[in-house]
Image (cartoon, rainbow over all chains, first blue to last red; front, side, top):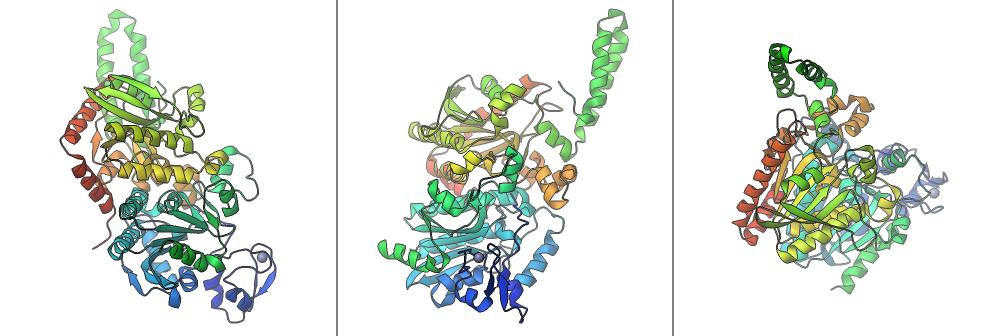
Length: 277
Length: 311
Ligand SMILES: [Zn+2]
């Protein structure tokens, strides 16, 4: 289901980079005015309240992979199909492709983390809220086949408030099965599979490949779950408790393995790879 | 039976027939009206809009999972509980027999009366429902029983407890179990297939939809409220989503359609039970002739291929 979040804007990073005089930004959580250069150096984490700003896939790749990116990116140019002739979808895709320079909401490639070989899969919230359509399903699967071929771990970082992409209807729902099928292949081949869950990972993404890793790592404060908080509030007709469906809450409820701040993601994954190598 | 809006004219004639039938001297008029009713029925149901099909799929009197279990299986035994938390009444599981085949089943039950609906949580499962299903999948795998699932849910329940107990994880693991299990699986969308909560028990080797069933990534109401900021535009959204059995077949998402009596299963439940029973038996014989490696290979190809995006 396509989950909408009105109260928070798209990742600030890209939008504001355009304006040279934007030296200061306001924390979306504690409203503290922050010096932009500082927060950029601080992994887009507010030094005042530890709020993790939503960031794009380029920044994540930069923070986690050696050399700041993929050594080889796979199947970049898969064409998104408009299976349903969904109103406005083709135009939206065109617009987003130009704006984000992405071809869809996900990317997959080969890279290194502290010299360990990995296949890294990532979704980007800027592109239709990181939602899962047929291209995402195929990229995820392709990456899995590469992992098996190279016998190296598979790491998937998700920032997918959209869940399954409404615009591709039932075909997007089927990607839950397709990506899960890929995870089964990893199991059969004894390939380590790690999920990094960032804000937000919801709906069909959270209820398929993002939940099935051997180890689930969540960024602090990330909204993670199946149903969107507003849908729940409308159903139960009461306000949700503070921190509901956030990483720390899920850790307490036994639903994730670790909550790891963004600046420690790389060392944590590297530690896991070291322990298992 | 409660008529839907577009069924009103038909129900009016049927009502009149019932009135006149009490007087034997009016037999001619009754016969004439009966012909008229048949014609009208044909007219109404041969040109249904998608939104009308949505309404039939959700019809209160439409046979539900329990009706099918009672009337399609020769015999069955319901089993209870996930051994972890509780027994979710939105999902019924058990073992049964149909034409000498021993089978296991997992079925979503919406209930019909108001009390039943509340009792069954309107067919919206909690994680424990899916975990109960997985327990039966284990049993089926061990004893090499084919699994039959009946899908009928608006979706997995969006609630506090459901999220706390890992709704996402229950759904994901249920899909994974269905896709990796070493026994054949057959799913029937019997009414409403609501998103991930439906797929959790519908990722089968063979997937079929009853003629007036729907299956979608989001409800037409939900889609309308996002797209038009107005849930009442659901009629339009239903057309956009392409969620009927016929759409699903065209999109390659299901393997076939199970014929329903004209106007829907609730008009002639007995005919529906007969159709479904024959269909299930046919599928069981088909799968019986394949060895498990072949079934797993076909399953892999089926889900590997879905929504393929290469040129
Ligand atoms: Zn702050």
